[in-house]
Length: 345
Image 1: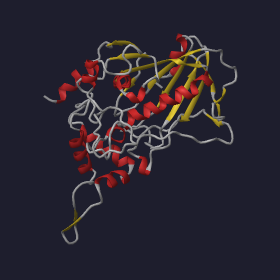
Image 2 (image 1 turned 30 degrees about the vertical axis):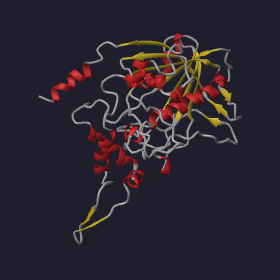
Image 3 (image 1 turned 60 degrees about the vertical axis):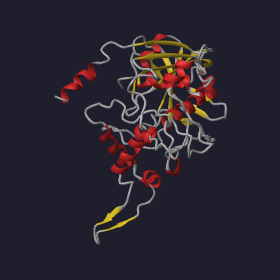
Image 4 (image 1 turned 90 degrees about the vertical axis):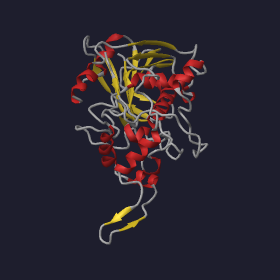
């Protein structure tokens, strides 16, 4: 089973939690804060095993308005009545032909053991609790102005908050908070590996499975995020002066940050496609970056403040000797890039 993740196009990052107690027959769960979820009963793909599914569970406040480029805020709303968790949540904004992007896409899906990446096949392989979640993507998730005003790595910080949600709530789904495994392919593997070296993720998981990607893959980091951000802002008409066509005079524009904050999400997503110079190169046009301390708020957490290669080489990262790791490469992983090469010649 392969689950693909890309910092520009979302599929899922997976969290496996070993089941510690038997599940109830009724797909109803009460969370520690008293909120009640009502889910669905489903059948696994091959063997028809029964499992419970809970969809569209919010874990973060929608990053709208002034929260667009900020670290995520915990969703902390008390429901008056049980929530029917039977519909998938909104997708986070991305370049996609099938779904309308929305900025309130911070949701989780829970598959309690008993589409092309259906959880039904996972449920055949034993007693697991499977969690998938959405997070900010592309420029909305990884724009970094280099001066601390927009720090970057918002999408990875979303993932951290989702992992904290798991620690708080997964026991209600018969999950074991002491047996959490991260699993990802390609950019998903990169995310999982980065969590091993980020102090923000310390203690939130115990095992990692990486397929065809690591934190030191050559395509991972933005090496000049400030330049990319400046170029992107120009495409959105969010930098410099504006020409008034009527009298041919220039008028000062609002600040770049304010302009980026107010740009409608559809325009924001469409313009980021220009960052790809040809086909899928660069593979991750706007991905993780090292966060600059200058000009940043002390209250804004930093997911990555040092080069991943240097951290791993020094051994100075929290997961060393604490997290078990299996890493590998999928067959034919490079075919997409080889095929894409025909567009150059």
